[in-house]
Image (cartoon, rainbow, N blue to C red; front, side):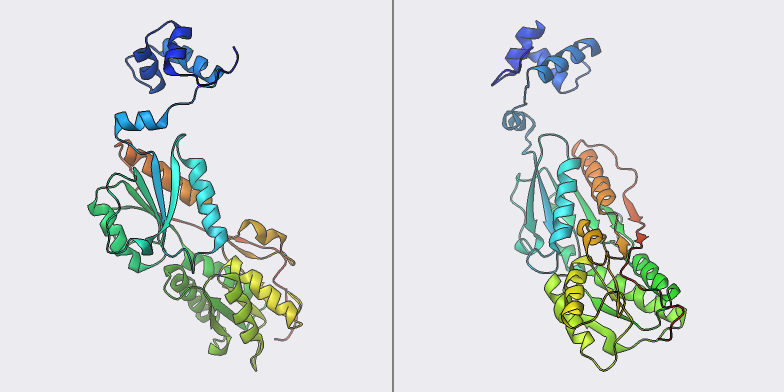
Length: 340
């Protein structure tokens, strides 16, 4: 059977020799239609290339088929690679027919979302200041999941990554490789991930009995330019560490460029640690040792939970912290047999 242009429910009804009501029920999974008939109708729909009219379905079900994805800050702090990764995963995980709309939380603080615009909302939270917006969405009774930042509440579906553990894994690895002078390029000062990664860094240094030097601490904003600028500042100091924990891969790109521009070879002269395991991290020269943040799993879990909320189904696992993993590549030198 050939693909038909502008195929409708009536087209399928004629081919299946049933009523248009039966077709509608079958395509929506109604138990009022026998399984054999449902399968026959679905097979015909697929064969002729039938595409549901989302707008018409929305009018019947009072749905917009629009999912809002909100980031803490779009213009600063949110790395482009993380944003793209989240959106790609959201589009893949959402049921067919849904559209993703992207916006910044900052555009709505103090103002409610337009009534009826979104069927559901995914909030990629990075700072405690997002709580005002989260409460606004909750008070509007819009189905919502909050990802990326751990909340100290249980009334909202919330999945996050253990950034503290990720930082610990990196510093422990650097210490095992013989590094005793480990610096850090921090991310956006207001972001919870920055605070957790800093905490993991400091605690790991203390546990390993390693030196802390505030000259080796620089504050960026998670974007490549800040990685470049802050690494140049660090390398221009009187004392240079043998290894630097750059707290996300985007800043690590800038940091490695700064090392090259100032004549420092990575990892021969200075080692670099990243965080996130973005797609390009394995193509850098040298390939970046980093932490794999389970963004794919995080977003998929969130979308599955949101889909259940949209269908008024129960979400049993409402909170979870996902474990990151260490990815060892070539940007950290083994200096165990050297004197630091």
